[in-house]
Image 1 (cartoon, rainbow, N blue to C red):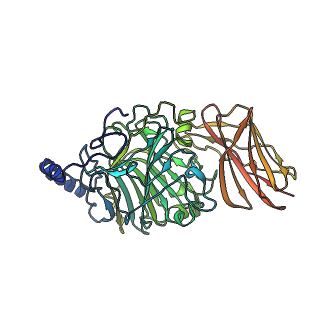
Image 2 (image 1 turned 135 degrees about the vertical axis):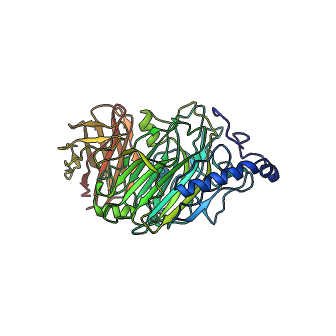
Amino acid sequence: MRKNALPGVADQDGPPRSRPRGRRTGRRVLPAVLGSLLLLAAGALGLSVTGGSAAAAVPGPPAGWTTVFSDDFNGASGSGLNRANWLYDTGTGYGYPGAATMWGTGEIETATDSTTNVYQDGSGHLVIKPVKDAAGHWTSGRIETQRTDFAAPAGGQLEISASLKQPAPAHGLGYWPAFWAMGADARPVGATNWPGIGELDIMEDVNALSQHSTTFHCGVWAGECHDPDGISSGLQPCSGCQSGFHTYSVVIDRTNTAAEQLRFLLDGTVTYTVNENQVSTATWQAAVDHGFFAIFDVAIGGSYPNKVCGCTSPSADISSGAGMTVDWIAVNRTTSGSTTAGGTSTGTSSGTSSGTSSGTSTGTSSGTSSGTSTGTSTGTSSGSTAGGSTGGATTSPDYTASAASTGSGHVRITFVPTTPAAYVDVHYLVNGAGQQNFRMTNSAGTWTQNLSGLAAGNVVTYWFTYEKNGPQYDTPHFSYTYTG
């Protein structure tokens, strides 16, 4: 099941059996006292502290800061979460018109509110455990804070932190644990306004690599923030992150509202920084200057694991039942320019928006094509198109793209890459509304997607994300007007 069993998890098929509450208190009095003293000392120094193998109390905020939300998951063994604080996502996507299926990422699990997948272990931890049934179907957990008002005030800062241990499956190709935050305006519309409302990926790992990446998503698809990849650190070393608890944080710093900043931290050390001047002011403000809600989930398969492995995940031998274990979460806020939170910077800055360490776009494509009445358009580009975490690039057309009517109200979008592609995703909008994202159907190297229900005069805007020799690329936008 796993390389090392997680504390308090009795087996892979369900939550652990109950243990007498007194045993936990009795055998941990001295460590708890020492831990409290260490946490107080660390708080005075403004350091974020990681928990050990045992559950730790939520650290107090640094001087001048206030804790606005926290949870240390001290519920009974096998119990669910307090639903006054936590919202369970269920199914395979937000149940909202126009919302992307499979959470917009291609992951294959179904999220549930079952204690098979999401539970407190009775030892001060939350566990999110993906499980595969006998038919090969995966279930897992995805939870959000009920509150959506975690915001840095103008002139102040906000820190969102959690202590967690990454899953440690024996075979992990396809595992995708994450701790992240999304802009409040996503919730009323099922995230159909993503990525403009902002997303802060505080911790993501894929394929059980014991690494982690941090990413800022903003703007529009294939725009200045390079989405769907975003402005990202790429995967970084994270030694011991599958065998022990580590603290992952993001600080939204609005001390200077003309030069705001995001700082991502691991155990109190800054590993990546994004500055406001890397994107337009309007894009930054729409993505940052508002409330957020926090999210924990463990996905199986999807675009990120696939991109990193250059394959289709999960693997046939992937292990079931390796959980992500969360010790605590805390959201701290200050109205001043205090710099005690945010740690010591020994990591790298993202530099400019065209120079991220994840190898996202180093040049934007200025070549757009409009379809004729038959929908034919060839993907040419006068810039360079880059994509994928490995940062590959192409400077000449290596595909053709077209759209054509196939009958009353029906249009077929076609993509033919010069180099065989492991996958091609199409993204399209009809009359500028309700973005749809689909994995296209491949037939002998020709990838297609059928649209229906169109009316004369409808304008279809479409573009593609595709794999070529491992890296992932994004095309310019094309348009096609259906004439009936």
